[in-house]
Image (cartoon, rainbow, N blue to C red; front, top):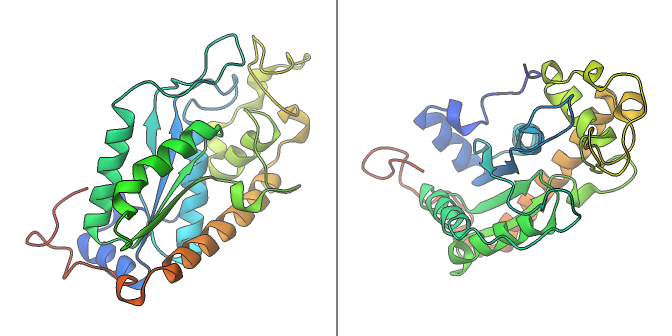
Length: 253
């Protein structure tokens, strides 16, 4: 169902020695996040994390590091039928993310970049708050981003199930997109039912070419940020920290 995304930078596909070699070369772990939510009739429910995962896979393939599998949250911030985005009140999310980042630190990563495809400020706040305990001692660096944050512009942006997210998926997971599900009539504006789409009509404006260009720009900018964060650490903390990826030194994230 996906485009040909390289598996040699995706953590779930790596054997221990492959993971160790990748992190010795560039000790960065990218974590894609998103929600299971409505993305029109034409896109999969997991679009948010899928697009981030695809872009991060390209980033790791080009710049180094490894990509954690997509992390999904229930959509707790949007109150249906309103424009009210509220602070997350579900107390399990912050400790869960804090634990994940702490375990990635124990794996030996020196930089952790959490990238949310669910483009609301609350997810970035959650990522950065969850990173604080891991980064507090100054031995690793981390940041929370949207997938397009560092390359935002005319060729790299986002929306909800419209031009940009549809283009992302047409490039990264073309088998998951079915524009015929939208029919031929006018779409309801401003994310209103029955379409729930916010942005330019994807039937007219989305394409795999647009998604490929965005993916390139986003991946390049995230890779550049990873190098900057690694270089910001004291020299003694820029290298992979475990003696080996083996049972006596490390077991699981």
